[in-house]
Structures are given as C-alpha cells and as structure tokens.
Length: 146
Image (tube, rainbow, N blue to C red; front, side, top):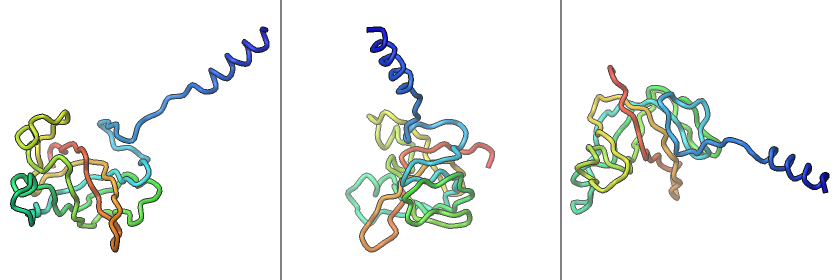
C-alpha cells in the first residue's frame, strides 16, 4: 500500500508546474512569444479610415499604419515576422480610440492611440488566403516619454 501512495505522490509532484498564458501581460517585454504572435514596440504613423460607413471602425478607427521600432520576439509559425523599421497595416481589436467611449461594456480598457505615439504590444498573426496574413493587437501599453 505504501508503494502505491509513494508512486502517487511522486507523480503528483512531477505534474505540478507553473504556466504562463499567451494572453497575460506584464510591464516588461517578453523575451519569448506564443506561437503565431510577435511582441514589439511600435509607433502609430497614421490611422487608416474604414471603407465601411456603418461599423464601429468607421467611427473609432480599428486599423493603423504602424512603424515597428523594435521586436522583442516572434513565436513559432509566424509566416512573415515583423522586423524593426517595417511599417505595417495592423488591426486593433479594441479600436484606436479610448475604448471606454467606443466599447463601454468591455472588460479591458485602453486609453487610445494617436499618430506619433509609441506603444508596446503582442500582435497575433491571422492568416488570410493570398497573403502573408495580418497582425491584430488585442491589448497594448502606451510608452511614456516617447
């Protein structure tokens, strides 16, 4: 009986480990990225107007040209990794406006971004037929002092 108990305890101890989810954020830029994501610092060059007139993106803006200042890491399976100096068309899931106005019921709150502002984020690459895909930002932090 004690051998079974000892084996159970050893298996329990071996199986215990700490994990970090890809969606978690921290103040410092990660040195590794989850699959299909890149962690980076960017600067908003310009906000891209939405071709639709009746969507939330027409009112608040959901896409921007972003100059990539630095790339902390890109995860596996990113088909076209971003590089410092690139200017990319990036989507913002929670808009580029202060989302307490754009999405008042959202649990996450972001202050909004304007042309010239620097921010850090992790962008997820979404595949689209006939292209290298697109990057979507689901959260960001504004870099102060830049």
